[in-house]
Structure formats: C-alpha cells, structure tokens
Length: 406
Length: 167
Image (tube, each protein chain N blue to C red):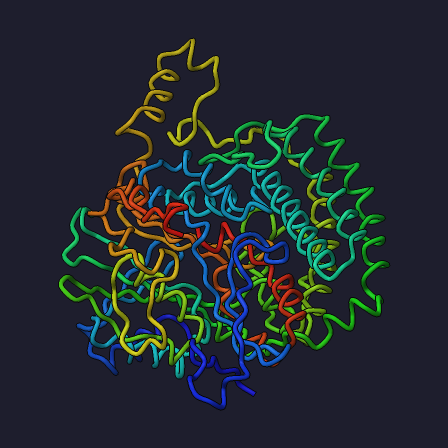
C-alpha cells in the first residue's frame, strides 16, 4: 500500500474538532537533540506529524566556501557528531577523489578501522538511546560503556575524544603507535561480550518487542522512492551497501557481510544495527591484524601533504612546500570541475557534492545528509500509530540534529 | 541500461543539442535545459531504471570562472538494480529561477527541494509544501547565495525583544 502524506495542516471544520495538536517540542528528552514535531492527534492516535527543523542550523555549507580542504574537516566532524571520524573520512574521500590522490595502503587500512569503529560507535548510541527512550536504562549504560573505549582509541590516535579532526588531504594527521594497536586488539576481544549483554537484554524482551515490532513499517518501494539508505533502507529489503557496491578504502580486500532484513519495522532496524556491529568488529579485526607497514601520508612530491618537521626546518624544498600549503591564496591546485562522492556511514550514504574553482577553498561543499533525508520519512511512518510510538520510530531512524540542520 | 545507451535514448528523445554529456573522475553527467529537465528525469526514472534520487542540490555560480548561468541544480540519480549513478544538471537564472518539482517522481525530493528553495530561492512548481525549512519562516534572504555575506546582515541581532512589562 503506497504511503501518502496528508496535508500539512488539518482540515478546518466541525467534524474535525476532536483532533488536537501536540507540540513535541525542540526541548524534549526523547527527541534526539533539537527537533520539533507538531503532532495532530485523535485521542492517542497520530493523524499527522509535521516536522519543524532548523534549530541547529549553523551554516556549515556556507562555511565550506570559506575554509580550505583541511580546515573544513573540523566542521565536518561536527555534523554527525555521534560518529565523527566517519564524516571526516567521507569528506576527505571526496576531496581526494576531486584531486585524484591515491592513498597509501596503511592509510586506507587505518581509515577503514576508524570508519568501522565509528559505525559501532553510532549504532551503540542508536540502540542504547532507543532502549533508553523505551525505558531500558541498563542497555543504554552497557552501550555507553563500550563507547568510552572507542573514545579512548580516538584520543590515543589524535588527542581528542570527540571531534578528532584526524584525516588530512592525502593521509592522516599522525600515525598510530603500538599502544593504540594493543588497545584496538583489546577492544576487539572485549566488545562481543558487551554486545551479547545488550542482545540478551533486548532481543527477546517482551516489552521491547511489543513496542517495536510492526511499528513504523517502511516498505521497500517506499524506501527507494524516499531516498533512504543505510540501515533504514536495508531493514526494508533494499540490498545496497556502498562498501560492497562502490568499494573504497580497504573494503575490497576484506571479508564481511551486508546485513539486511525484510520487515522494515523498528525491530528490523534494531536487529540490522546490532548485527552490523558484529560485522564491523570482523572488519576491524581483519584490518588490525593485516595492517600494512609504511607511511600514512602520500608522497610529499604530490604537493598535497605537509612535509615532516625535519624537512621543513632543514631543507628549502620542505620549507617552500609547507609555505605553499599553509599560506592564504596558495594551497592545492584543484581542477575546475565538480564531483559527487559518497561513503557508507552508520546512518547511510553520506555524500559530498564538491564544486571546485581551482583554489584551495571549495566553491560549494554540499553535504548529502542521511539524517535529513530519513527524517523526511517520519510522517509517512507514524500515521495511525500511537503517541508512544513516536518515540520508538524516532529512535529507530537515528536522526542526528547537527547533520539534519547543518 | 548502460551509460551509452542511456545517453542515446535521451538524445533521440530530446534532441542531441539538448543533452550535453561530460565525465569527471567516476561521475557521469548529463546537462539538460531547464524546460526539459522534468521530462528527462521522468524518462530516466521510468525507462532507464534510475529508481532512486540520491541527492538534489544547487550551487550559485556567480563568482565561478567561466560560468554563464547563475544557479546550477543537480540531481544525482541511482539505479538500485545495477548500482549505476548519473548526475543530471540543469541551469536556471535570475530573475525568477523556477523549475518543475521532482516530487511526483520521487517523494524523497520533497525536503531536498525545500532546502534549495530556502538556501537559493529557486522555486519548484508543483511542490506540495514549498516553504522554508532550515531558516526561520520570517527570514527574507537566501543565505547560500554568493552575494549574501558569511556573517549575515544583522538578522541575529535584530530579534524583537519582549520585556517582562509587555508579556
């Protein structure tokens, strides 16, 4: 049955007087961050839901026209702040596509490890917050305990827990050391137990199943027509994963499976996310064990990376190269063209549409935000459900307000 | 359908000079005039198998080297069956930049077009609910245009102040 959106305002008239409006406001513990829903209710049944967004709009895309390709990574970090390094990897993936730079093998593997760590990070929050909103506090705490370990890994690699700004054009900010590798191995060893704990709490939990099974069903045709990607689409049967369909970084060498479901309800989305975490762990394990040696940055001759400190202080070429990349009006020579590139983040296809005008600053840096596109789906999913299902559906869509509004 | 066959089909339907093609890295682009873009998108969706709209965005080419028109609107289409992508580009100009809405074809175009309207002022005819989405309703400018400054024109400092005596 195709889903249709009702008019944005309820019809006026005497027969509609029993409908009442509830403001599920921007400040509410169960709306993940600042988004607003104006719900039209018939008793407890939702007749219509009109989302109102823009509370966190910070002009990220306008800033992208003023910051260069390495400075903008700090902004991109702050979009999907639940999986920050995934955004950075996506951004530099597209910038390197524009510049035609091929990364070193070690950099590819490290970026893959971080991309998968961030996928686990995001799914842990989504699952934990979904449980929290439905009343399961313990699962939330188990999930957040594991997220602390991922924050420790980010801190060891880049110095910052939350917004590492770790990637650069042509490589990474710095290489990882042996302590980091030991921490990563430790994470791979201890995560399955925490995952099993969360599964045992929620998978066959009567209350959780009653509140999520059959709620917010998205059919496969609607998922495609509404531009859904990621776990939201895969739980409806759309078998698309950019890691397998348009492989990038180290994914062609790795052995993992794409997780799909057919039911398309909140429970299916939860199960897809839980299993994707285990697949991500498999990928991390393979990458850590097979991490290639070598440099993380591309060769200095490509004129895209900063030379190391000894070269800058002790050779004129290094000094000039450093100057060229850091001073205004210089930096990278980009082609005068535009490109769209995307990676598979935890929320779906995070793409950037970059229009370059030859200078080191993007002319237009557009983000294709999966949260924005998925929140658009919300009114279609919630029609006919109860008020308490609003929270379940919102949690399963994993809408991150900073990516929604940018 | 592969790219060559798609371009052939578009050229025979709409005329060879209406359909310009280009390729860059792995993007394949088709540039069409604004009055034919809806028919092109319909043909691509219904006959060439591009069933998903991955992205709908715009850029203001006011300061771009070598640009002739001002607003470039881009549709990134995806075929879920074959995994192929196609970028459809069209150009609109001041005054009155208008395009037909793609919402009859893809429901996902709804909010994407609202954002292009909000940020650039491109009006989409036939859109079910074309109003501002990210900026507040009473905002008057279109912020992502190149002639709108980064720090705004003082809108953030001119909110109406309601004192305790008034409220």
